[in-house]
Amino acid sequence: MNLIFLGAPGAGKGTQAEVVSDTLGIPQISTGNMLREAVKNGTEYGLKAKEAMDAGALVSDEIVIGILKDRIAQDDCQKGFILDGFPRTVPQAEALDAMGVKIDKVVEIFVPDDTIKKRVSGRRVCQGCGASYHVEYKPTKVEGVCDKCGDKTVVRKDDQPEVVLDRLATYHEKTAPLRDYYEKQGKLVTVEGQEEVADTSKLTLSAVGAV
Ligand code: ADP
Ligand code: ZN
Image (cartoon, rainbow, N blue to C red; front, side, top):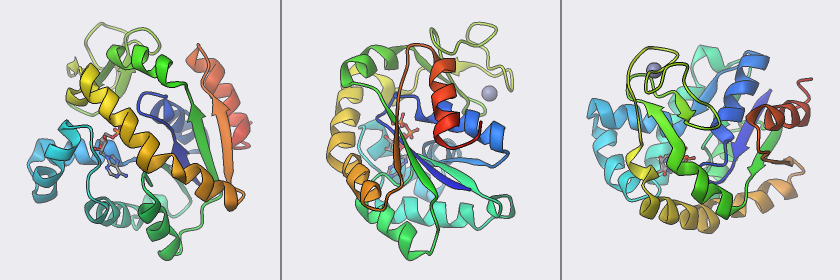
């Protein structure tokens, strides 16, 4: 099964993508995590991506399509995958179609902007492995320490309040049109983000037919 997870920054699409990935045993492919890794390693495209990311803007379609193409060609993706954060623009969706990648469902995790603005300030990310947490909704077992690798969890640079507003604007302008794009293909399912992560997960798993 090939799935796409859509959602505004901080709506919880990554968290839900992870739950579905664990349940179905197919990889979660987060372009945001791949880009942050590239930035950390100072690779050529990491250097190009950094400026856009820090400003809450999108990295160029060319770069992101390139890394995505390489990633889904790997062995572990042959039985299916979950795209988390890709596509984010209509040209990226068109590129996916042009590659002949068949998408079964597009899951939109919907959370109103006001709720998002409150939520992102609590978000934390592991500086080692990139795992995501939230101080209130998805806390680490030990404060400030990643459950998965033991490294330190930090606030993402682009989670600062001013940058979040820019990311939300970018989402509405560039990414939200994908709802129509996939609605027309009959693939869009919308899940309303709930107060409790576990409640959203139940709805998400049922939306993808995993329970
Ligand atoms: P969130 O969904 O919380 O905004 P991500 O981790 O998915 O965060 O992405 C972080 C940043 O990485 C984005 O703001 C953008 O700059 C860049 N990025 C990730 N995926 C894409 C993509 N498909 N196209 C362009 N830029 C991307
Ligand atoms: Zn970690």
